[in-house]
Image 1 (tube, helix red, strand yellow):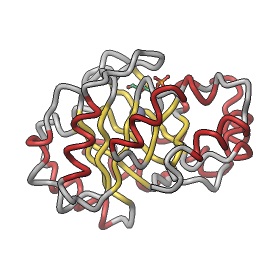
Image 2: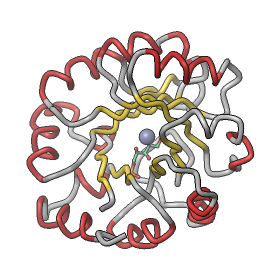
Image 3: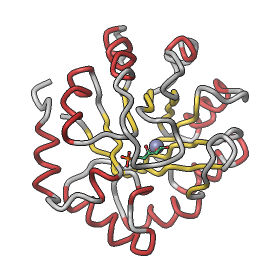
Image 4: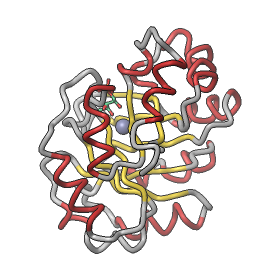
Length: 215
Ligand code: DX5
Ligand code: ZN
């Protein structure tokens, strides 16, 4: 069954606790926290304190996506704040294997994210160490964009490679493109707009969970 990870980027920032509790009640699986440094991506979003506060109001795993050029500057702080899954980007210049080791030393799951135009060859050396690969289905930085369909081929390639980890996608995912993604091998769908701006609530979550349930 595909896991649904609502991205708080699309939540009402003035009512974050209420929104998170709603996602949990509607049956979502993880909470996705988009962290942006205004350098790796031309936007700023969320810091470690938000993770610390979220930890107090939900039992759902906190799936923290570091869109940061230098994640080493705050890696430990995010881990101490309670990140359960911490994902760095393949495109950074730092010590990626070292960062992944540090995340594991702390007892969290480690992920690596790929922009749409970044190929799997950029992470071949990391695959045996990471628990999750996040295939961005939009250019990182903003919610509400259209999904890049060519990324499905990357998901298919990774799934058919026999790599045993979790494949996550993020950006532009809605109910009408979720089945294609699941059929390509997706395990976790990050959805901002499609979950937080959904008027059908639990009914929609149940319908989306049933997509590829037998897979
Ligand atoms: C891009 C962001 C968005 C967000 C999801 O950097 O990471 O992908 O999580 O946005 P929606 O689901 O609204 O496209
Ligand atoms: Zn994200």
